[in-house]
Image (cartoon, rainbow, N blue to C red; front, top):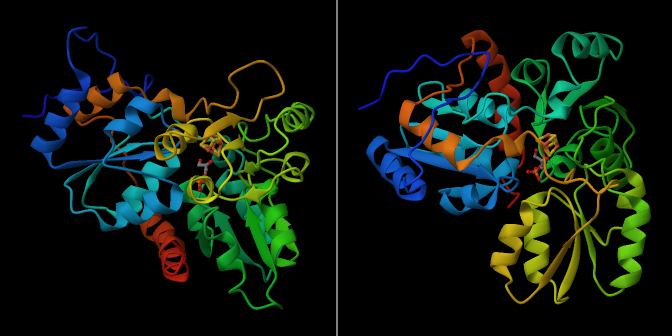
Length: 330
Ligand code: 13P
Ligand code: SF4
């Protein structure tokens, strides 16, 4: 039975003191079974959450899973734009996010009103937006992409068709280099991926000269120029398993190291260091989700993602185009 609860919107998550003897893993598994719920988690979630998830993946894999699921309830252990995408794809299902405050600096950088004005200044452009944006920005876009399929999608756009790419300028620059296409870039960045220090990375390369550097394309050019492989989280994970080296330097949110280490217990993965001695290579938004909040969210079926139907339909079209245009990408 669902316990009725009025969520305080100012708090954004279920705030309740838990019995410390409760086995949260067992309770979450029980609630998932009882409610026919699926737990989808991004690689940047804390290890405990990854271990209890039904599916762990990158933004593309998570969107596909959300589109295919036959569960009644989708619990999204990720950030707001990811849960929102699941809701856009599943209007009749309940989609939960353990903490509604789990945002994204890229999505925040691109408010829909400002983006509409940017579009108006670039008439005749097709709009390709990275999935890390709000439903309102998606609704202003022609095609959505992720870091796994962006290059594949851009290569399908006719050469003479001008393109707007938003909101990540680092990914946009990387794609311009890869495809040779000029694009009008929105000036957004990921606060986690801009934190890596080129100077410290060079220091690490001196200490581990044989270790390939694996980097996410959200990193700045100064870091990407030292990378031996650049790709999405799932591409980085796959590369580390297939490559013969035994030590790797990894420039992305350090949550990914959990799966990489599980896949390859004999290999060593070294996180690329941030500029200061902080934990800035952990996404502060992703890490708002905890096992406790996850349990409470499943128990009370709150907080729930809701959306205006007109907006949902407008945001669905460019997501469906992405799924169609990248069906061949694994
Ligand atoms: P991918 O999951 O597409 O690799 O993107 C990483 C990211 O920053 C998600 O917010
Ligand atoms: Fe957004 Fe960066 Fe966090 Fe991903 S890692 S959710 S892009 S702030």
